[in-house]
Length: 344
Image 1: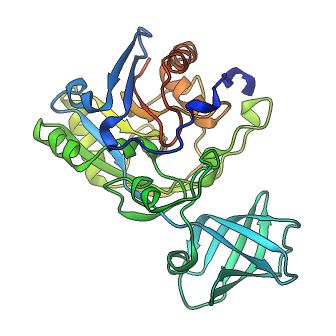
Image 2: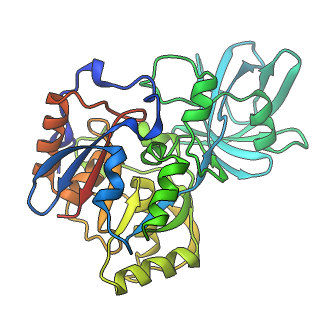
């Protein structure tokens, strides 16, 4: 299957640069994966589209201030984007510089008197292994000198509004460098309303990496290499899902990250509570084991996430839905509108 099969035309004006005034004010495109039928709704209508006894599964990761600026020992400027924290003082990161720093070299990060030194331990493809030469943890350093890592297609620098809105209201476990954006549409009032009507809420944690924004650059999608991401599925979530399925109700993943975590935890054929790393790459032909419906935003052309939703709802259904969304002026990507998709 070719990467080109997942390309589409998107006018730049439809790339949302800011969130809606209220979290639930987005549009919601409903796609029946079985029939291909589409319906235009508002995200505030979501409770009416669900049934008591359904189970919503959210990703409770928290976005960290993963972007840092500094300089190499030679004086050249560097920009560091932490991809994954592996220990209190170590992390894998993307580094932008005029010349890539060599293993054994050191870089200085921060400004205005708050500087931290890091040693480059090695490199794996486009990721650099860094060790921070301090007693403070990577998370503590990021809180002091880091910046919120807005996606590359958002053109303004992160401000106070972004720090509040590029984070879900239920974010708990710090470690993501990108928000699980389907969850950005939920506010506390909606979560309460859903629980009041008898909808179960469960959580997984998957720390989203920067690779989520990377287009697939190989011609044959089978040649694409996914970056690993850490996830955990607790036993309480497994129990909720099993209860939902016994009752004949729907398990709904809020976001592709929730879906990927659950499908990773069910690779043996049975959903199991687990904490591990996953590089699962879901493409058309994949047999879904856990999820019945998916709430998700609109994804980038040629992206692994567009391939995932195409696997879930069918390539032609997604192609038609995206054409409809463009025609109807839906807002795309992280701050954009949402879809509710049922499995084909």
